[in-house]
Image 1 (spheres, rainbow, N blue to C red):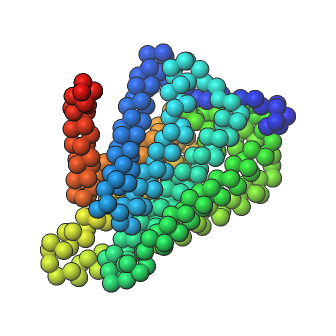
Image 2 (image 1 turned 180 degrees about the horizontal axis):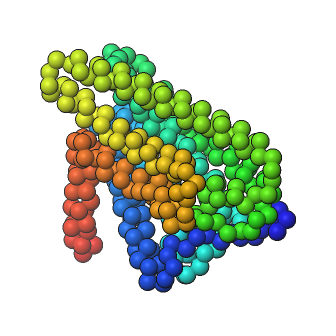
Image 3 (image 1 turned 90 degrees about the horizontal axis):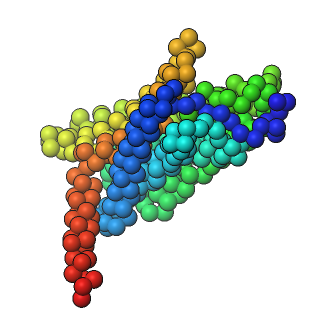
Length: 319
């Protein structure tokens, strides 16, 4: 294969070697994806329908749930399809779309986590200015900036990756189209554009990380100065879920990117990819709902209303 234009499809890494294990992984992926769909779907519905949750924090949480749904819907359905039909292929255009949308949702996800850190910083450290700094217009602009940054970054990265000549086959050692695996197929020795994007990405991520760390130093300092124990507990309860989600995101992504080559193996790379791309979207709704009483009450109220409607449906149909 002389270049990427001659590649019509890529070969993905199967989830297991035997048919029985493939079906086991299929059910595992299906369960995780359904949990992610249910959890994030409930958060989106609750925030959208309950006017008590029309706050900046919950507005950004709704956007975060959308990115989590996007992440898991980009990679998992194709893996389930391949396991079900015992195949490993993905079309060239499908691979391009998978790379684009995965980068798009992941970048928007981290941007929203950074914005949510700013939301907590203003709420705790500058409560008198909260309504001014985080009004509806400001929240909409920040959310739009997060989605726009994800779109721009994924567009540049995807276009650059697939513009490189690929001459080392078409087999990817991953269950989805991962950029690092695609770059291994490149025969180009001048990846200056890719290196420039990676360096720029590193400094952007580093800037967001420093901002998050600095914000939480200020937040914890302000919380510890609150005189009442109940006030401190309430402030911590609004920050800990966000801190847990950020830690999960950064720890899994950092290990995937920074693990030494000596540790690299197809099975380990597969496990790491599942941990950073599939697990967080399913776990994040649980983390956010555990200590958010308003959100739990809204979900409980919505589900109670749905069950009541289902119970009264037969009577209405018989009338």
